[in-house]
Length: 227
Image 1 (cartoon, rainbow, N blue to C red):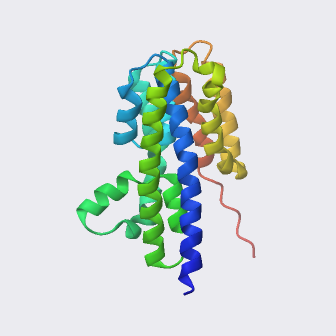
Image 2: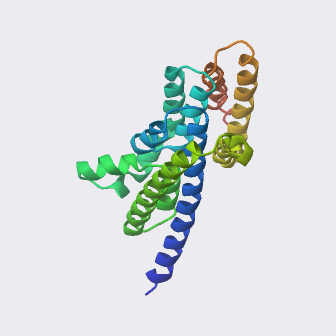
């Protein structure tokens, strides 16, 4: 009986996240097509990549005239966080190879967050799969609707959809900026990107901004031992 309220809360929270994901998916599909890219590209990315930040970054670089190689590398770097994610939620995915493959594909920030919020192993597994499957469905439906809707809109900028790229990326980054070291790294990377934008081809400033990560990974000086 005690698990019933928790199940209802989980269902409600997952449903809200899925609804928001669908709306962002609509923006992604519409903007991609509105930028002159083929209608199949946002749908293919959403099925095979299924990573909102990487997809927005990839399309943003390509739409700005950047190289596909730079766009892919930027997406890979953004998704590098999935390595520690996998270590954290590995037991929640399962042990069989089919579950591992499918579960790894569904590994996104929201699914990991919902899973880690649960203490019980069974509920953690339920939260992970419920969120992952739900978001995969709503995201792809949203992208499909946005892609076809974007073909009927001559200028997506009039709807303010052009703001979705920076708005979504900013929303994904803001929670991490609470940490001082991450904030310093982001600031340094921003300075490098803005400076490089004046001479580097599209896409390269984003890769160069990764120099800011050195502020986080550099070894810290050990404090002297006290007597």
